[in-house]
Amino acid sequence: MTKRADDAMFRDRRDAGRALAQALSKYKDDPAVIVVALPRGGVVIGYEISLALHLPLDVLVVRKLGTPVNPELAMGALAETGYRYLNEDVIRTYGVTVEQLDAEVRRQEREILRRSDKYRGGRRLLPLKGNTVLVVDDGIATGATLYAALAALRQAEAARLVVAVPVAPPDAARDLRAKVDEVVILQTPAWFFGISQFYERFPQVEDEEVIACLETVREALSRGNTSAG
Image (cartoon, rainbow, N blue to C red):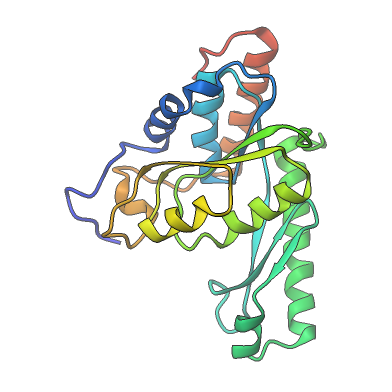
């Protein structure tokens, strides 16, 4: 998408992550707080927050369930915790059969397993029960995967959920405030067609960068050194 010259609010995801870290500074060094990023773009945001605030970083892999006629149209979402959300209206409207739904669920289950194993190297998801979770991404468009992630984190008994993103449309920001304990959104522009328009540079984040971010934070925290990057 071509963006207007004055749209960009952040140089890149790292710049946005550093700005969010400042807005979340009250959580610095809190042993009951975990940063959970939605891969892949959200992990770069989470990396900057974790290093700045000395907080552990993990990912929650959530996959959209696409309709057979349009894979980009979500009929639901699936989280690695096992949580499943289905949009019955979309399923009905597009005549999705049980067989088609089951096939898409199986396909996304395989992808979730592949990604979670690759990102963590066999390690388990950090303990969420009783902790405050900072849920971060590089922005909100439709919010489908984010809402599924929030439901999964509630199901995992996180004590508090804080959504932190650089940019989101105003209606998404309003909806979120009714669903979580705290919302930190740096910009809520009315003119919103996609997340990328608010970044000068918005390259695709590869699996290798996700893994590097997670490993760097883990090693920095184990050494008591968060000046990496």
